[in-house]
Image (cartoon, rainbow, N blue to C red; front, side, top):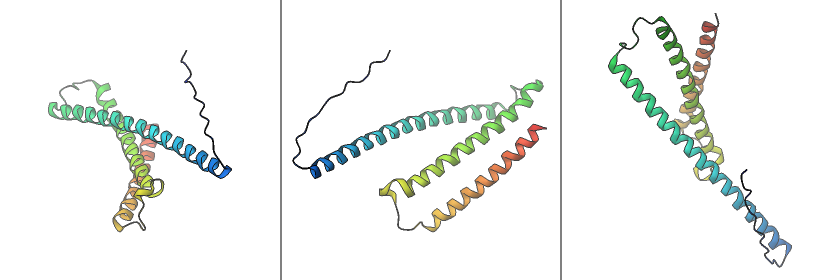
Length: 151
């Protein structure tokens, strides 16, 4: 059974309710910042894990490219299931990449005040349009893939 963390009671004499309110708001802000830092560290750990996974997959694909199709042989199951696995995996990877790109773009624009700009530049707008077009294309391909595999 995990142990519950201990609590420390801190009593600070304050001279006015305004001083108490400002201290409380400062303390609340410090807690929010610590929680944000913890979430960011967790996200960084996930990004590191994703980076390692991407590198392993790239290494595996490079090895398969070097060896050609010599490992497949005449096995019908392997030759039929591999394209489906690759297609499904590729769809998921593209979706994750899109979500990360969208998240970073939104975080820079809305959540992080030190990244705000007065007006988005033309390059940012064109990238956003490209991402929308790519997402629509991806959604269309996913739907077509679903209908093809459903039959």
